[in-house]
Length: 141
Length: 356
Image 1 (cartoon, rainbow over the protein chains, first blue to last red):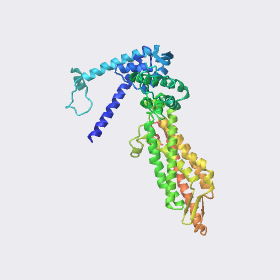
Image 2 (spheres, rainbow over the protein chains, first blue to last red):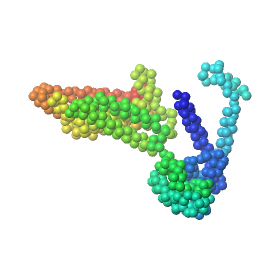
Image 3 (cartoon, rainbow over the protein chains, first blue to last red):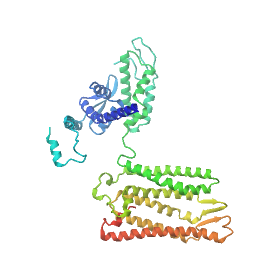
Image 4 (cartoon, chains in turn purple, green):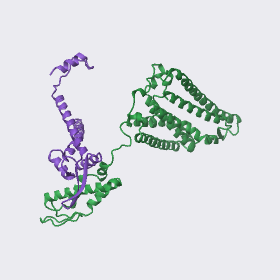
């Protein structure tokens, strides 16, 4: 059934997108709480930047990051309501810096992989390349 | 920010002349209370306060957009959009599965081997027919057998899950910090080595067989230890009841041996010692049984009237036990021989590559 195949494909795509997003959300949240935020404004801020995040994902994530010592939180009154404000801890700053470096490396590597022209190898039977073949392939732009 | 609504849940004046329908003051409280029910006490207060704040912010924002108070349906929609209270609470709980990814393949394999590969055939071909014969009619017997199988399967499922959950909570260092040098030796190329190609599967099979036999034994002794057939009633003698625990221990010691084998596949000598000990315990139990004057109590015609028949009922049981004892003795002898051989040959001794 073509419609079933289409649904399966879109479900698989949604899952892959979810997996891809999962790690980057942590990075986004850590980066966003360099300035103090409470949950609602943090979500708004991220949504404004195009990173929509569900409340049921955000709050447990904030708590997990806090338990890992990457965030610190404080209950404070604002507009006659008590809110929990989060900000990056000292340790969180270091981790964020390292994560950003790692992400940039990954991004660069991925970009290089994406830019490498796809060359279907019709001559080889499917086995691993020999040393010479590998060298030849790598040496071409 | 719209401040027309009081945060105890009652609504203040909207100032816009819009609809004045109020939403129940306890709607949010009921929602948060349900979320809190699924949260551990240590987290509850903190999480609920934060969730309340987030929900109120959202309602405020919506009221500002509409310039009026929200209706009951609209507040309910906000809460519905927030999600099922149980799922919301679940997000805050520690993500620790009962059985993790590392053990899951072994767990499924154990369930399949024990329930489908061992328990089902035992109940289908051994326990089932015995129960069917001892029942007033075939239908009742089959129903009892199926019921007993279901109980045994659920019990096995529970025990296996418990064992694996314990492994998960208290993992053996070999599970995560494993060393290739400690892996089981590759079986030799001898013709009879084919069945040993999957040492983990065979180990689980040994564990499962021990567990299943133990369960079957309990079922038989505590449930249906008598067979009635065409006026003859055969019943296990009291000696079986006396030796209930040693027999059960002998059957379930295979479970222990299998576990050790699974955790330390690099210790063939330890496995051989374990199997030797099991063989010794089994042999002693069997000898006590054989020495007992009555193995099977029998009543009814022709047993009551014909001493020869009564004699052969006893003798039949005794011959079966002797045969079993011979198998156990041979197994013990083989293990002992392999153990002594290995002292000279080291762990790569072909004999000690035996699984189970």
